[in-house]
Amino acid sequence: MSATEVLTPTAQYRLREFHSFGALDARFVYLVPSGAIFALNKIGGDIIDQIGQAGPTSEELVEFLLHRGYQPGEIDAALTELEHSEVIICGDFTPAKPEVPVKRFPLQRIVLNITNQCNLACTYCYEYSPDKISKTEGKPKYMPASIAEASINMLIKESGDRPAIHVTFFGGETLLNFPMLRSSVEYAKRKCSEAGKQVEFSLTTNATLLTEHVVDFLAEHKVGITVSIDGDRQLNDNMRVFSDGRGSYDVILPRIKMLLQRHKTNSIGARVTLSSGVHHVRRIYEHLTRDVGFAAVGFSPATANPNRLYSIGEVRMGNILDGFEDLAWEYRDWAVAGRHHGFTNVNDTLKELHSGISKAYPCGAGLGLLGVGTAGDINLCHRFVDSDVGQMGHVQKGGVNHQARDQFLNTHHIGARYDCHTCWARPVCAGGCYHEAFVHYGNTSAATLHYCDWIRGWNDLCLRIYGEISLRNPSFLDRFTDN
Image (tube, rainbow, N blue to C red; front, side, top):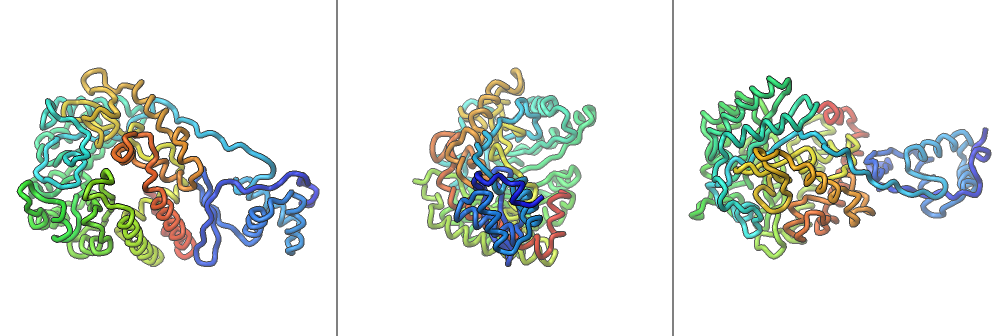
């Protein structure tokens, strides 16, 4: 049966929702909202171009393609594949409304803010800066073991059938409460063994309190570590200072090198907070990888009201994207050669793109992750711990407040964030960080519109890099499936 016989001649073809991009001489489309990546052959490109220009009926489109020299069977196959992949559609359609995921989503991770104290006074810190939203008055400075154990019990209970769970330790400066951290690790391993579950651990630290004893314990229990550091001495000490104004770089550098030398059982990465005084992406990356020895470095802008002096601002955000692009293309070169590159921002985005992720929410906060404060209050995530926002119960007084949790998930789903409905990057972004939205707009459900152009630019860049890797060394992408 020919193409002219199987298609209704009066129906018009339309393009569905996708983002076009190119890599080398190939054409691709990134499909929204499925998050799939579709490579176009020549006939596919001709079909999309003609539909975009003329909105033809099926008869007109087939006639156009026959005139271009394509055979009827080839046309049928191409149109069927493009329709099946939801790149095009013949006739009208109504996009499906995003559905709220199943309620009572099992927990996978808790973040224990085991202290609200810190021995540094970093200018941009969301716990101590003018943008602070937590209220720690009357709360313990250090989480007691009873609260940590109740939190772990809650996680095991709320994890359902998940075979593995994760406990993250956070602060303040996490290692100020190392004795309780140590006992919590041992408690969690014992209770998970009894429950038939595996448990993994991670923590964030400013590295000032690392000792051989501490590091050996963390290595023994395979604790993943994120070290907060902003680059070389000059850049780091712009913001990351002690309360008397002294920079922290000279204190932490030998401790970090000792950590990297002694801890080999889990990942150790550097987290850089970009601000008005720290936005030199290439310089920071090279120092932290080549001079210090980190295998992974990630960057994140400081969360700040735009009126703060440490706020990055639009001009510097543009400069940062330029710096990210420089490192991202280097990542591409290394990937083509089959080499590891430590720029985690591009690595994480490529992993999401490869998996075809289409997010209903920007992160796991309130979904598979909850934060717990020193007094046992449960909140949306570690950034909202001890605030009036995102409260979801108490670990010793009834556990998770599922009504509050369900209410949050219903009102923060991508389907309820109307500013995002026409954005092609929403499968990866889903509206942006709740904390960033609250600091900027006073509303956790607001889309982070001040980052939209930046996010679209970044995702387009990563798609082009993904396309090139898929053409030049596709086996490199297997690591995103294996992990």
